[in-house]
Length: 111
Length: 116
Image 1 (tube, rainbow over the protein chains, first blue to last red):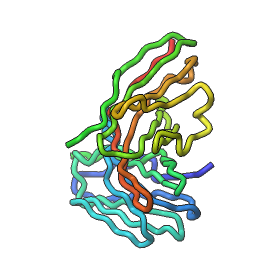
Image 2: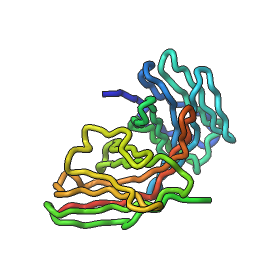
Image 3: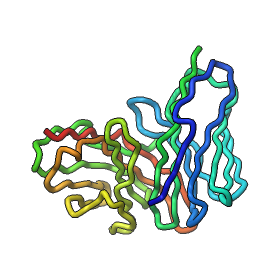
Image 4: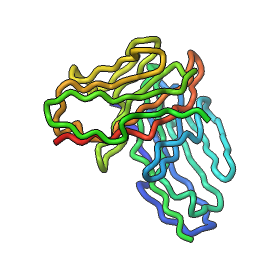
């Protein structure tokens, strides 16, 4: 059973604060690491796919890093806005084509 | 932008009945997936499907479950004899993943399955 863990479980920040959260995954049989953004009553939306150790991806104010050797990825949000409020999911792919999701980090940004 | 569509949005079924959940993946995608989320719990992988066969399945995906791509566009999940614990939101996803390349999965809006 693959264990993908995300921390913290939830986070409350003020508008303008920068924040980050962690996804931990097994360091063996790594194929890819996905980050998704999931707003209430909507479907998960893909943010990043990361495949190489040391990868850094950026999309506007959101960025992510990947360390496959130690089995973690960080997601950073710079200058959080209320519209960033959502659950952020990471998913770990093995080369067998199976995605294992973490429990998610729920971010609430207060105006 | 192309979307994954799922029907129905909500399905209510008596325990023991068969149910079919339908998905239309993005047309040029190659990999198809089903996930479920029981209320208050994490998203759980059920099955992945490629080249007209199951490529991977979880321990949840037992003999009561089956998937099919009956034509070039639909991808269905069938539960033969539903149980109360099958009540969940079921998500379909597709990706253009090919050998050596991992693409993001595009999710449908989900079907809420309620077993009475």
